[in-house]
Length: 160
Image (cartoon, one colour):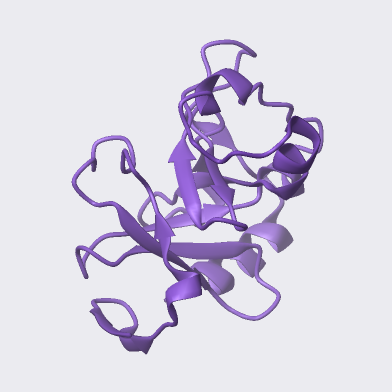
């Protein structure tokens, strides 16, 4: 399958790369098909590109790289998903991401939405964005401390 995107031009995908979101992302419920694209080799950032809108893409990352103690209680938020697996296999297969906000001109001040993680099951290519009501997580969790070296490295990585 070929798709046209604003950021990446035309990309070629196979059906196994397409992620279905029955409820879409928060605020974007009409967009239900996505693909994860690596930002740059060895970068901790990815693009969550909509296949329904070539202009819509979110920067995402794995939360544990920035908050190793992150422990979202996602089970309740996934109860309505029909993934038909026993609990152990089901939870081991999940990939968790957070949506990243990068302020214009200040990438060192980027934040992640740890309150609304994106949960992907790669075995069935479905995903859901869960809203956590417990755990004290914020939708604007700072990813970096003020470290000039780290900030400069990140500025290079997120430039697209």
